[in-house]
Length: 602
Image (cartoon, rainbow, N blue to C red; front, side, top):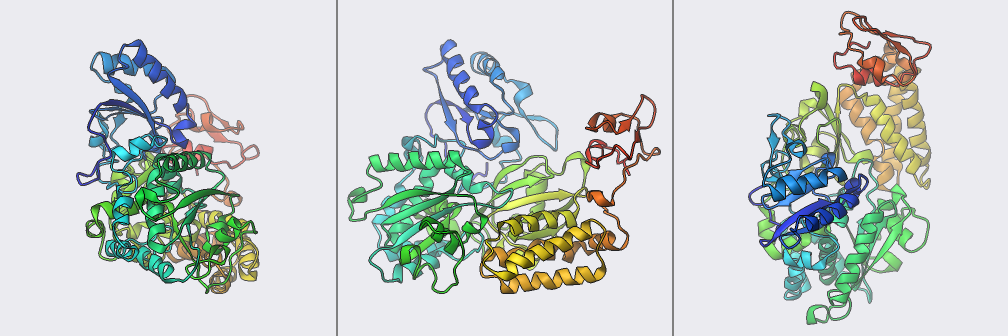
């Protein structure tokens, strides 16, 4: 990893690190963990190696993973039946299990350790500093890598001095808005009130985003410590983590961390011998996207229906239960302990002039290696996609990247070298958002993608505002007509007008940003919209109503890949003969297009 990255690795002992984040757990990582302990014991190495489970290190595409530390040998796509071979070949004989090593996407050579991997090297891990390397259910593991030193330092300062340290760091809220964190804390600090509250927003409802989940699963104590520092700074004694119910592992590990910190006296009365009292509770959300908005979130905690309220008054003045309240998201809080231990000036040296520090992105879509990446603000999109993510699979070309989820916009290939920071993304019509980054190639229809995101926000609308409730519905109907070749150019003009009305008339961020994917795709890919309307064609061959599949015999290599991929037997093929598609049987699922590497399906 980056040479200046905070090292999460204890200096002593040899370890086997098994990722047990949600992705790896779904692929039997628990069995791998148990099998490793058994095989280590059988080999007589129980005194030499400690088998430890961790949270997600980020390279989700290659899970389950096992890291032999030292030297950091990175085994990927491990199955329970591979465990005995790893112990025998690596630990006993001193060799490597070559077939389980990571293959570099550029050189096509096997890479021994994570230190050498192009996925990790360009990263600078501050938020994810411990994820993948410490046991998230062991407070001593967190303390061993410097945990809870930030709150100790904070308690040696006055609340306003803590706020000044955070302000000097330049940290901006990582939940999407990008508002300066220290300034937000200062507002709440200065608000009078006999009781103040602090809330950690772990709702994270964007499709394709899983940054906050991974931090709570892999390093929950860093979030608790960040909340403690914030609570001290603003004068709050009670706090909530608002975690969506679809994150059972994050919820479980948050509760374990709170219990451990309470037993140690790090939470509760008189923390570290001071007069600072602080308690944290976890509130489960029912999965409403609108509850990611501050006022709707607070209503949900209060037991009410999650619906936005007008502002002002802002939460810093009148928030949870009518008291001054500060809300930040998981990633924001995870930065705070580092800022207090390393200093605001140290943090401010990372990133760009106006966008300080790092940003965690959930890399997904048409890319070789999906997962979590943490890069300094200002890193180019090209470096994230090509170098860290391994490029686009199947030798296809980058088309666009969607940032900010359903509230964001697309970045087309003409801006592939854009520095990823708040200002540059806003300039091209997108937003940072919470950090979702979905990559597309030429097989992606931008009309269809806009329709996908709009259908999500339309379903998630709480219904309070007419513009959002009905405007998004009408927009979706128009988009559907375009995708089916049933629209006119007047409909496209109406779509743009509706989008502006929804943005202007909606109360909260859900409605105000819902049209963004539509507006940005029309801005950069208007030709695709016009092809659907005027020529009744989908250039990406995605919109089913506009497609009839046939084999281009001149381009067909007679390999039979399309025949094998068809789920309904609509393709006939014999060796050394071109394939043929029965249009009556064809269900237009696109399996043949995805299977054909020679673009022989028209």
